Length: 104
Image (cartoon, rainbow, N blue to C red):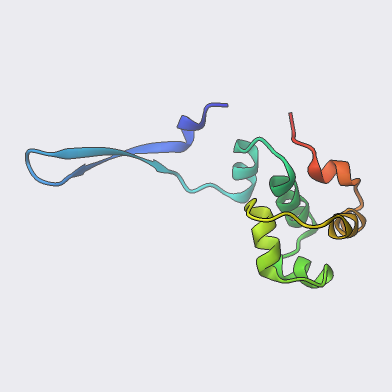
């Protein structure tokens, strides 16, 4: 996948003798960001949540956990336990495999 098309070049002039070129990640919508990523649990969870029309806080309440836990799962900082995965598959009406599998 060519990620460079999602970056834009910015030139910063510190003074007349020095300039810096930086790559800045452009603002993307949730759908665009999901399209750029390779998939996996974090992206699948976020996609399923957005398709259901729930906020992170709403999903957290449905799973009897916190908004922060959902945020951590969606950013790949933490992983839910098997019981929570089963509950997610019930809520989203999909298999656990569909939540965990990377998209091709």
